[in-house]
Image (cartoon, rainbow, N blue to C red; front, side, top):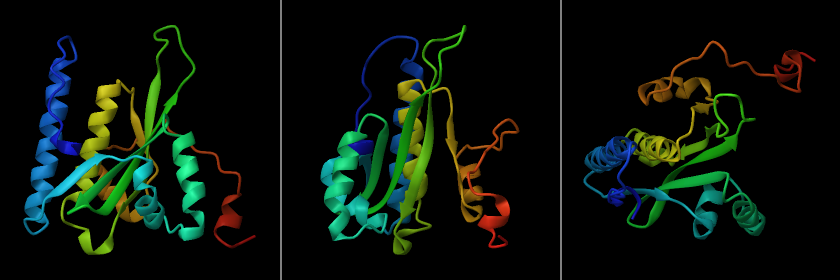
Length: 187
């Protein structure tokens, strides 16, 4: 269950990576457990059964749960939710978006990931839960052989992502449909 998943036991060149991912998951659970007042934090892959809790974390009201559940089912292959729970109560989540780049001469499989919608309930923040969610997402990215994982962070969370292994990259650029002046209220 969640970060309690045992190593797959598959042999091959990726076995060391799988062992590393398993250790990372176990360490993230231990860290989150120790810091959350000895309450057991479980980080696991989410599914449509978690839709009500995930919708609540996204500020989607009861009237939107059915649509959100449908969206989750439709996007289950590309948008992977991870949940952190204590005693069955979802206290946080993070999503891994998996996408495919156009094949190139070096590789046909050029999948990458993007971390989205990371949220930990305010009363559970600064207890290692966010780091445990990130460890689970990055372990999944390794298991899937993703080329890289990006995150579009708010200013307050940049240090959190840096502490979890992300770095600034000079080659990532962004285009936004709204001119900068309009976003800042100067239009």
